[in-house]
Structure formats: structure tokens, C-alpha cells
Image (cartoon, rainbow, N blue to C red; front, side, top):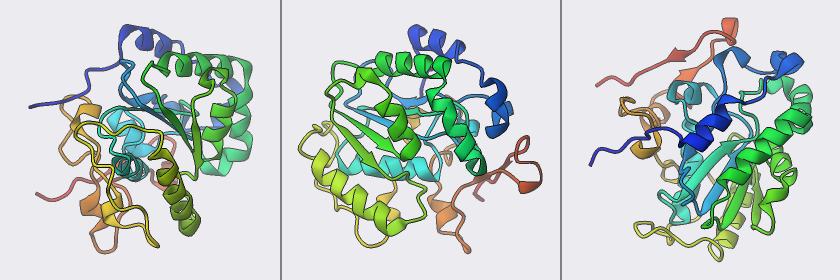
Length: 257
């Protein structure tokens, strides 16, 4: 069966089309690459809503969020819950925030137009089957805390998948998996008995991005960087921003066939 993401339904497409401009805050973001909005189910069937801080270079290539190394870690997290398809991933920022500008960029989260638009998006995404929200990283946690529409839906706050404190990341992700097992119902084809996180992040803790989450025509290696992580020296992502012109240039490496 050939699967691919056909794009957002009309209600989401219309909302994406009126994403507020960043105004004077543009300089804190990789603005010229444009916004990235989602990955996963926009049809109300999501049991788990994942919110992360912002998209990166692989996400720009894919036109979907949480697709690169961080996204493949999140996909592995969902797999440990037995969730294979009933999820939706959204951003705290629609645009990619430059890490060195994070202190200034975070003010965008509370800017009136951005806050109102984001909460409408989150409200539209809160389907009847939603069982849990997972906020990856401080910025995502702030965005979720600013969302009244989350109501009483359980929220798990965990470190961002790119956290440099791997020991704490693994500890917190391990605890979250244990807690969410009592809340989230596995998908019919999911396995909720998979081994939890140990002392190191292993390749088995990653999972490739399903083809159903990516646009038609995406190359088979997009969303699966296992080959890059296994190379010597390891490459964390097949897409990068060169330092000399990171606002306007991306470098994308394809594996040798």
C-alpha cells in the first residue's frame, strides 16, 4: 500500500494561510524559509498531541515538523506507547527559532496575535479522541500552558529531544513513558511492551517517520537517518545549515545507494 500525506483539510489550510507575521521579531528566526506547521493526523483521530519548540532544516525540506533526528526520537517515544499513527505534532513557533536568539524569540509566544492564532490551531487540533498532550522542551511547555483549550487533558512535560543533558532526558522520558502507559490506549498495530529508555540513547530508541506523514514523492531516506548515525563519524542529520549563510542555504546529503 502506497501511503503519503495529502495535505491539510480546508479548515487547517485556511488557518495556516493566515499565520501572523513575526514583524520585528523576524531577526530571531530563520524567517526567510517560511513556516512549518504540522505532522500527523489532522482529522480528529489523534490520541496524542506532541508540541515541540520549533522546526529545523530537515523539517523545511519535508514541509512537515519533527522529521529529522529530533523527530525520529519523538517517533521512537510514540512507538514505546504503542502509538503508530494516532498522533499529531505541532509547533510552539511556526518558524524555526535561531538557538542563539532564544532569549529574545521567546517573547513571541506571548505576543497577542501569535498567541491567539496558536490557540485557535490547538483548539482545532483537540479532537474527541485526544488522551494526552506531550510538551517537548521549555518553549513548548510555555505554549501549552498558555492554551486554555487544553482543559483537563493530561499534559506530560519532558525535555526537548535535542537536549544536551542526555542523562536527564532519558530519566524524564522514561518516567513519562511509565506515566503515559496508564493514560494512552495503544493503536491496534502498536506494541506498548517495548523496552523503556536505559542509560544511553540507542538506535533502537529511534523510529523512522512513516511515509503517511510525508508528502508524495519524498525520497525513501527522508525521515530515516539511521544510515547517517551509523556512519563514521556519525552524522546526526542529513540536512544542515552551513554557518557561513545559515539563513539562506541548506545542505542536504543523500545516502549512497
